[in-house]
Amino acid sequence: MARVLVAEDDPDLRGMIEFKLASAGHEVTVVADGDAAMTSARAAPPDLAVLDVMMPGMSGIEVCEALRADPVTAATPIIMLTARAQSADVSRGLAAGADEYLVKPFSPRSLVEHVEKLLAAAAS
Image 1 (cartoon, rainbow, N blue to C red):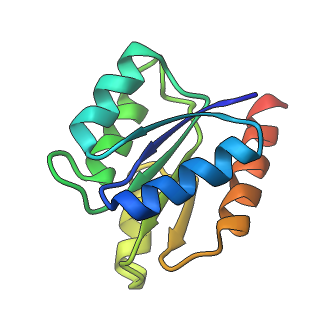
Image 2: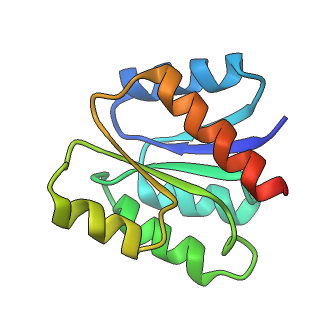
């Protein structure tokens, strides 16, 4: 069972992601903004983070950069979730250190598959 941090400001989407990942056997911590994501990651480093790009406080991009800059979380797989689908947005997310960039709306099943793939790669 992996520890997954989910930072998403939309409560309905946050609940759906939490349900799907918990149903897949993961221990899920959910937060509603970037500042809470950093607080949670520092208190209990996750095995993987799912970050919304546009959140109150720190953006998902800023959280991603901060996680990459911290030696404790530098290797943590990160999936960015966003409604921003322009190629410049994708490039910015990947340049910040994200491993995957999923555009909303997305398939919950696809998210779980991406999570499983990144966790398997991190374990090997």
